[in-house]
Amino acid sequence: AQTVTQSQPEMSVQEAETVTLSCTYDTSENNYYLFWYKQPPSRQMILVIRQEAYKQQNATENRFSVNFQKAAKSFSLKISDSQLGDTAMYFCAFMTAVPGGNQFYFGTGTSLTVIP
Amino acid sequence: DTGVSQDPRHKITKRGQNVTFRCDPISEHNRLYWYRQTLGQGPEFLTYFQNEAQLEKSRLLSDRFSAERPKGSFSTLEIQRTEQGDSAMYLCASSLGPTSGGLYEQYFGPGTRLTVT
Image 1 (cartoon, chains in turn yellow, cyan):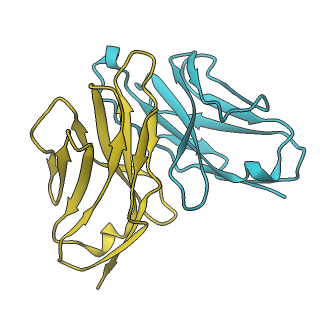
Image 2 (tube, each protein chain N blue to C red):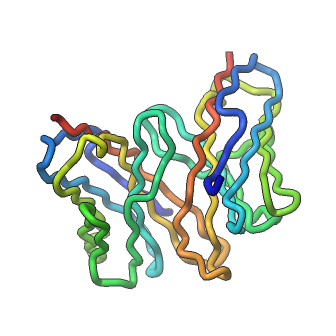
C-alpha cells in the first residue's frame, strides 16, 4: 500500500525567512512521481512543484525547491523568501506510474502561516 | 475559461436525498478524477476516468456513489440516499494521461461543498 505522511500539522515562518515542510512516503514501486500542492484558504488547490523519482536532481520552481531523498523516501519542500501569499495548506502527493494505477495519494497536509 | 469548473459550489441537502455534482475538466485533458476532502484532511481518491472509461474506483466508494463521463468530456458524481457522513468537499481534477505525453500533474477545480442535514 502507498502512504504519504506529513508530520507537521502546523508551521509558521516570518516573512522573508525560509521554511521547510517535511513529507515521507512508503511504496514498493520504483517508478513514481511526487508533488507538492498548495491550497490557500477557501481557494482551489494548485500545483507548486513536481519531482520524477528517476531524476536525481532536485526540482526547483522560483522560491520553491525540494530535497528528494529516494532511499529515505523523503520529499521535503523548501520555501525561500516567504511571502504573505504563501499562507496556505500544503499537501504532499504521490503517484505511481504503473499502467492503470495512476491514482494520487495525499498526505494530511501542513498548515503554513507566514507572519508579517 | 481554461480551468476546471465544478457545479454547484455549495449544496445543502437533507439526509436521504439524492445529489448530483458536475465537473468540467480542462478541454484537452483525457483524465478526470474525483476526490473527497474532509476538514483537516488531504483529498481522498474516489475514482478516475480516462476518456469515458472508468478505470479505477476506491473501496471508499460505496454503492450509493456513482460517477459517469459519458462522452469523455464532463463528468457527474451522484450520491444516492445521502447520509450525514457524506458531508465533505468533493473535488474534481483533470490531467493529461501518459499516452498524450502528459506530465501527470492534476489541475483541480474549486470543489463542491456538500452539507447533509
